[in-house]
Image: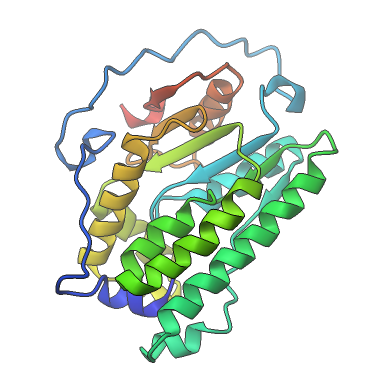
Length: 264
């Protein structure tokens, strides 16, 4: 998101916000809040899955930093010849944010909000075509990060603009919420070696994971598939990816939990 918020985390003092709620999976040693249905059924290996096999055409992949969103989006788009919508990280206000200049946090979050809004409007045009659209974020991500990084006064103004834009944003037909514990996320962040993440604070990452868990614990906007990614590797183990693809070909209603075969 931003160098300062990643490196230093939320501000201390009365403006620091915390979340309560049960994590959606037992990533931190907490039991699941709902029973996990058995989602594995027999495959038909003789029938390859195609774009028409999927019961949706707009899928959003969400989750905290380092959980593997963009990797999965790239694989899905390649597999089904779809259109990827990747978050734009080129933000002209980031240098000031890195230097912790007054007002830079608000400018940075505002830029990301408008950038994501523009991308989502492009999706509206692409819906005229029969292609799979896969995004590596949901629009509600804006609020999760703004809640972490902005002061109360900044957040009030941010929310006013967000509330004007959000009704015009297309809703994904399915959200994949990727989850992992903090150690798994940190290992993946280290592995990809992005310079702006090298000083990532464990405290900030933990609060971000808590924020996402809190949001998706109460999520009911669209069908939701919660995917435990701790012990799987979509990029290097084809069977892990294909197992998920098989799951995506089945109708998903409400919130469902999916533990890939490779995690056992």
